[in-house]
Amino acid sequence: MDTRLAKNIVKLIRGEQQRRASLLEDMHPEAADDHWLFTDLPFVAELCLMLLVAMRHQVERELISLAARAADNGKKSLLSNIRRG
Image 1 (cartoon, rainbow, N blue to C red):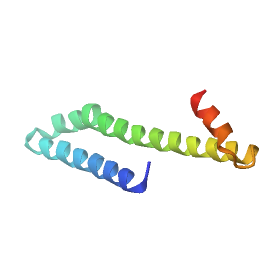
Image 2: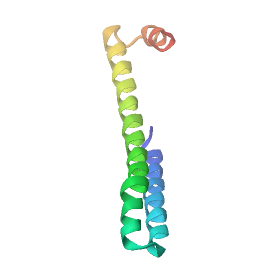
Image 3: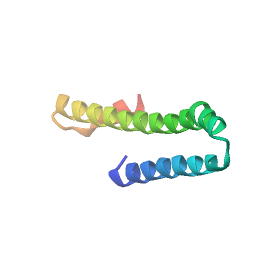
Image 4: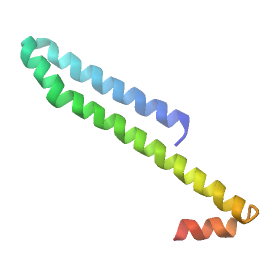
């Protein structure tokens, strides 16, 4: 995942958070608080968690790739076997 994609995903999450918050302005304050706490906030938090998990997986892939290259003096044959397996 490159930084441009990550920035676009963060921008999307912020936009969704703002969109959902703006929909609550017309609601009764107590109902809006409940809706935000129990519906909108968990959804936005899940989006953030999905981004973090995707970033972690990318880091893991890159570390495995580096380890495979280091273990076999930089040959790509071992790396190809890891990707297939």
